[in-house]
Length: 360
Image 1 (cartoon, rainbow, N blue to C red):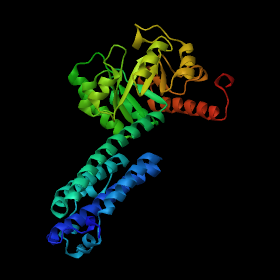
Image 2 (image 1 turned 45 degrees about the vertical axis):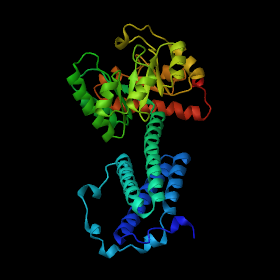
Image 3 (image 1 turned 90 degrees about the horizontal axis):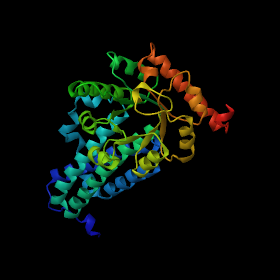
Image 4 (image 1 turned 120 degrees about the vertical axis):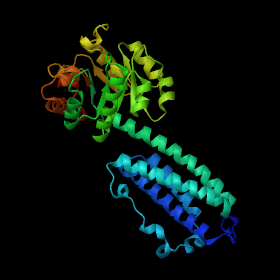
């Protein structure tokens, strides 16, 4: 008989029951994560990672351990908690099941040392693999959501900041950057915390402008850096590999450098003169044309874009736009957001039918 299954002849029945329960728990948690990777994210890579790990865990689930099961006599079946009765969204569901999986593997690691030393060692290595999957999956989810976001709201100081952003989120906005260059840190931290919670409640990404420390403090989805801010790799090192890092660019040289730095996305502009970038001359529509042919990562045309010139920007080839005043100063932010999204969707549909922007 394979030594792997010739285990624990003198181990207490309680230990075998613990191993049986946690092997089930680990596989169940992994299956829930695997299903989202397969059907929610359409990621063959991460679905396979989960499947392979689930099968490895299953290989330790021997007949002997299964036979030790005593469900009717298990007092834990009656234990519950109100938080187990509901899930607010898929993100929370995944977090709960990653925690469940990691806890189960830790239990298997410790009790496995009593039952079979190889099992304890194997479960330890599998736990580290789960940490890698969790980090990678978070990064993949954020980057996929970034790719699917075509309208980017950059905030400006406003007494009705929270209300305006929520109105835009209600209009379908999925990407928000908090930007306030003038307020004190306490105000900025308070506003960033509120906006982060609000965006996550609506399933939107939340980015902090410039301040890596503030992005960490509020658990933002990433940070947006200007040309004079810290290098992208340092920001990623501080934030963690699962967070997004964007960079502003105003010319082809800065674009090339940002791509080499491995930024997740860039801003392309300012396309028009704008009071938010008084020190930057307009890059013009020519920079959009350059980005269309040379940028290999997601990019957002930015700078003075509004409802009047949006068609011109999209006709020049931009697929994503970033706006500030057009929404932040709008009387009806929800309707303005819906207008921009409808225009972006219309141009996207036309391009999918091979209708070139200049022919629109």
